[in-house]
Image (cartoon, rainbow, N blue to C red; front, side):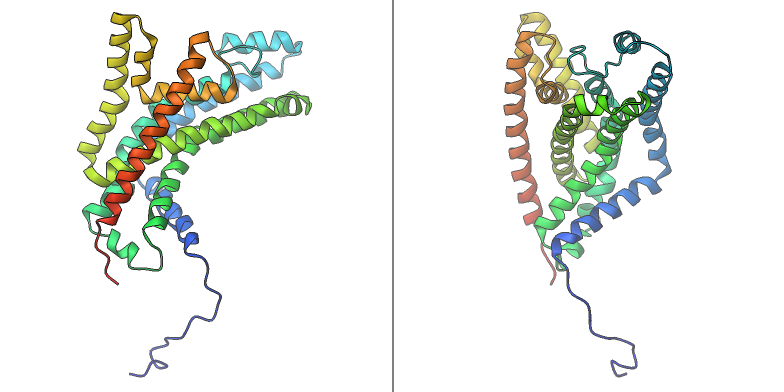
Length: 296
């Protein structure tokens, strides 16, 4: 059969950059998560806290109260809308409080998004195309970061937008524009650290049970160990064993608010620890992907 009869034809359009394939990897990963109904329950739990804050902000802002009294009412419900109004800034507390849901979702999605590519030998199919290992790694990191952002960054920005919208003035957005920047900075820390750790662990362990056990050990056992060592030695530097607490400290560094003077010093050490951890994990991930044989 001739090529014309088989309806094959050459590509007539302009070829795009292989980096565009990263967006396709993100799209496929999100579809995998949202098509799995078991993850809907975890996502719903993550949205419950957001809806609770949304309702509280709406109810308080509809009351005819002075701004200071409105802030006091919000504090009663654990939310502070201004950075300088309370060191326990509401946006920090909200994003940090989403940590449990994020950890659960990532623990069970690592095998689906990354581990299956190695376990089912589908990674050589990716790499046999025009994309290379750089595009695959970046695509998977962006995919995991997108899942995290849906539960942390996006809801926090919506709360910021809602508070300014229901105060019937743009003064809140203008006076507190640094909040949006700080939310994006803190969200970037959460997304980068968690995505690098999860993709690296999933690339090596591949199956859901060992991934979940390792993930829980990092974010639960290390945290409890740090608490016990701090309680016995009275040295707050033991708190730095907990990666999630390190991310919260760096988040306070982004907002510039600290409960204690020592937290500022701990935040810089936490930033150094997270940077070192991500560098080592990323090097291990690159080595793992390079070991995959490519079929041209």
